[in-house]
Structure formats: C-alpha cells, structure tokens
Image (cartoon, rainbow, N blue to C red):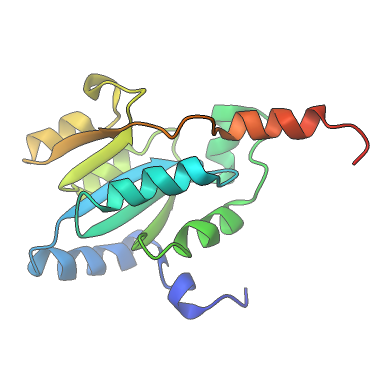
Length: 166
C-alpha cells in the first residue's frame, strides 16, 4: 500500500511490538491496551480511543482479523478489510501501535503484552473483560470508558441498509 510510513510502521506483528514494548517499558512509560473490530470508524470510536490513550503514555490496539470478525459478527462482516481498518486506526496520532489477532478474544495477545492498563467500554464489568485477570495478576489495572451516545457500527450499517435509491 502507498500509505505514509509513519502510519504503516504502527501496524506491527508481535516481534516488532516486543521491541517497542521493551523500549517503552525501559523508559518507564505506561502501556494502555484496548481491542475491537473497529469495522466502520465513527466519532464514538475516536472519543473512546482518545480517552484510552489519555490514561497512559502509549496506546496499543488489538484488532480482530477479518476471519475473527466474521466468526463474531456473522458472514456479512466485516464491512472493511483488516488492512483498511488497521490503516485507519494507525492514522490516529493517539494510537501508537496496531496488532492484528485471529482468535475470538485478545487473551493471547494481552497475556504477551501485559499492559499496565486494559481498557474496554463501560458496557462491560471488570469480571467480563477478557484478560482482566491476567492484567490484575501482573499489577496492572482495568479501566472502563463510557461510550459517546448515539454512535454504533451496527446502527450505521442498519441506516445504510434502510436507505432507498441513493
């Protein structure tokens, strides 16, 4: 893809992320992790992710692969391919790294990263947040963030489907 290297370099595999984590942790930086499908980015995502980043020094986003999204959301999802979704997330100045995961949950990647702060939406309780036990066992903390009212990917998809002759 012909995207800016500053954006492309934020989309990492675990080997690349491990090097970044070592650098960041050696500097004493606070690592924040959140995850999701981020199929159609909207202001609710921007608000949520910027608030997540404000909790620490570096924000890592775990992004479900296309296969993972399809298993979780159904055969008509994702709307946008994983490369597009990753580029969109990496373009945000407050996102420091994007890593794709193919599992249904981010437990494996959370267990490897061991973030200082694990963030999810406030529609989850701490005991429902995948990886919370691992993060807490390693001295990290769990934060939840309220969603911006009136925005959801499903609502956008429904609105598009209900539109007549564009």
